[in-house]
Amino acid sequence: MNEEYLRIEQNHDHIKIVSLGEWTLYHEPQIFRALKKIIPDKKIIWDLSGIKSFDSSGVMLFSTYFEQFKKRCEVEIVGYTPKQERMYLLLQKNRATESIPIRHENFFERIGKNTAASYNEFVQYLEFSGHVVSAFLYYLKYPKNFRYKEIIYHIRLSGMNAILIIALTSFLVGLVISYQSAVQLAKFGADLFIVDMASISITRELGPLVTAIVIAGRSGSAYTAQIGAMKITEEISAMRTMGFDPFYFLVLPRVIALMIALPLLIFLADMIGIFGSMFAAGLELNISYAQFIDRLQEVLEAKHFWIGIIKGPFFAVLIAMIGCFRGFQVTNDTESIGAQTTASVVNSIFFVIACDAIFSVILTEWDI
Amino acid sequence: MKKIIEVKDLVTQFGETVIHDGVCLHIDEGEIYGILGESGSGKSLLMKEMIMLLAPTSGEITVLGSRLSQIDYNEAQMLRQQWGVLFQFGALFTSLTVAENIELQLKEYTHIDLKMRNEIIKTKISMVGLPVRAGGLYPSELSGGMIKRAALARALAMDPKLLFLDEPISGLDPIGARNFDSLIKELRDLLGITVVMITHDLESIYSTVDRFSVLADKRVVAEGNLENVLQSDHPFIEKFFKNDYVEKRLDQRVGRNVQ
Ligand SMILES: Nc1ncnc2c1ncn2[C@@H]1O[C@H](COP(=O)(O)OP(=O)(O)O)[C@@H](O)[C@H]1O
Ligand SMILES: [Mg+2]
Image (cartoon, rainbow over the protein chains, first blue to last red):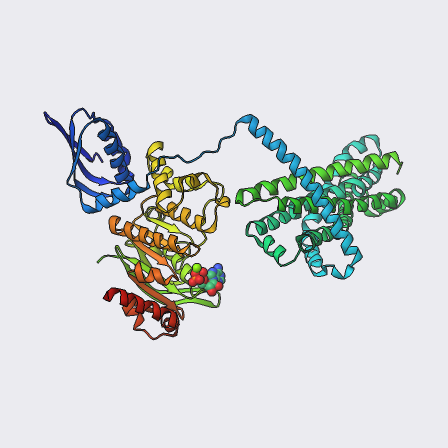
């Protein structure tokens, strides 16, 4: 491996440098090290005739040192081929003294920028919501313009296709809830109260929350990624120039579809969740299905169920609007799709839970 | 003359759709080889098969002495370091600046120190006709033509022996296009690289390309230099080369040569 790229002969009135072998990219560090050792204190005669092959980096290395030596002493280049000379000239023509700008931000700049960006995002979100509402009102005024086909398509995509995963999740949630509480209730001999506990908590809180969280992860992220990708490929600009307002064609169908699908999915989650807890109650506390259902009819008032269902459209609006808004926030690079999708899921889950808390407070105040 | 690439009886199929049906061609060392054909005739796919992005349905491609159907992982990695590719739509990494895009392979595969690396990058940027400060920009901040140039600079970063260019000059202004052509020619002359270039540009075909093949009807209907190809009477060649516009240009060229 110890190939020779440079032979140096010290003569009494000059140094003779002979370049040898392959002056290419992969050998550059070795050549570089050899060149660094030369002390240009006398006239230099540089013989290039031994170079077997070269590429632009080899020639650039040569010219860098040629320039350096020239400042300190006389340099004579011999034995070069016309090709080497042309390559030298081509590269020399394109050597630039200016340097590539590097964009640095210090800590405070970053904080400032992020704060301003968050504020701007908030303002833009308000603007976006306003736009959606006005588009919605326009729809109500001219229902002819409803994009039924898109709405149905999105109901299928984000509603029907989610049935299995929501059924499975809510079954497990129902199962776990009554399994855990069964142990505690059995201590007090209050076995049958499991029905009150499970059914009310599932219909009022857990059904809607679990459904909304699954949908936020599943559809909210999909909305962001779809719209974001459309933005990068300039499909959205194309739509705008053709007079297709993306609010009518992309945002509203998704929002409306989710407003219809989410309450239905919550209903499904309620049923399956209660079935899950019935199943666990049967296993753990030997409560028969008939007993469970009898008690259920006694204790589960319709209002609990309706409160859960009513939350659906609210959660749906939050998830769909945040998903779409984040999609429009995507800038022209692929990394921002990832960042916005993450933000979309995190934001929508947070706001769903916050909205749920507001519901709790208000309903408690009203004694419902 | 050494054959750098050889394509034999290549068939490409997507389900029922046949794109290539028995494509044969060879590319010699040190030549600038053009691939011509209508949109959708399978030029880009042919190139993707040469650079191992797509496995052909059947047939054999040999690149720099390696048969692609039997290549192992290490050999393939070696091969990938010897070529540079310019994609039709640039395919720059959007999260990196232009300079970082060019630097990527240099940093990974060589041990050149930072200062020299910067010099190389700057020279490459200016060679393809971009201002040096464009090195600090992100791809989303470039125009279409600038993306093409930056992508060429990235393809040239490692001084590859073999250069694949997919429609390199579409989207460039005419002056830029000619500079592009002469740069490619100069690099070929000086470094002896082989260039495979998909192009629709008549001027490039006249002035830059040594030999080319014409893809039509799922195969190569003519191959060779301009004279050879013009002897064919395939409808596509008739349409592409033997119209009034081209004939006028040809006359002009002949006229100029006589003077
Ligand atoms: N993944 C794919 N599946 C099916 N057909 C494809 C695929 N990729 C390309 N094609 C078809 O192959 C043909 C050739 O494509 P391409 O090589 O990109 O054309 P061009 O010659 O314009 O570069 C086109 O008709 C295209 O529709
Ligand atoms: Mg193509």
